[in-house]
Image (cartoon, rainbow, N blue to C red; front, side, top):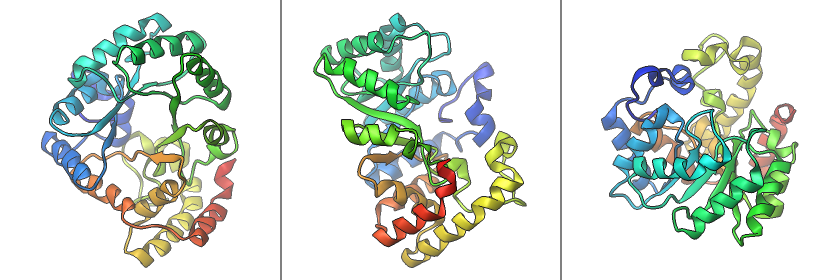
Length: 298
């Protein structure tokens, strides 16, 4: 979300104010190269991230890499259904590509007709400019509408990108995960480390930086509640010489229809994230983590 060099007011996006920016152009380059070397080949961005600078930077870095790029539209809050083709062309220019591997509608609104939007996306697939269609922040009902509209054109709905982690398990109870399983859709999990709360770096006395420290899930009560979960992650991780972050990511990976997309501001974080691919949890460990975080299903 924070890659690239935005200008003007785009330098103060919510993501940068919450997480801080990436650690420079060289670290962005090293993060991508380290990820690819570790077997990570999907990179997710969005037109809205850093006002297009994230797409532009990813396109530059990935121009000679055999990777899949997922992006999201629109690039601003002022969007109408019929704007989609222009949004796609702008993203393709920034990404330096003739087609995008996964093109996702970033968030539903009352002003956008899902069936009409899916029809335009189907046109883009037929034209070879989009290889797969996804959505983001869609409810189970909205997913079904999108899935049905695309099915009329013979195109599957590939994914729904929603928040999902051990400390945010709502997809399990609001119907989204069940609908993904039923319809053969991948759930792409954003904020898989609960914005850093699962890393073990923060506590009630060690505050996160930026705007995160003012969010409800980073207040003293929330951080105190999360500490037993972090300690359990640490205990399980010690068996495999892995960190709490890596165990938290692995818990998501163990679900065959879930794909976590952790962020990386530098190569060190990218290498750490990729370590989640290097081990597996036992069924008993998965159940233990499930039971320890039942309160976060509410």
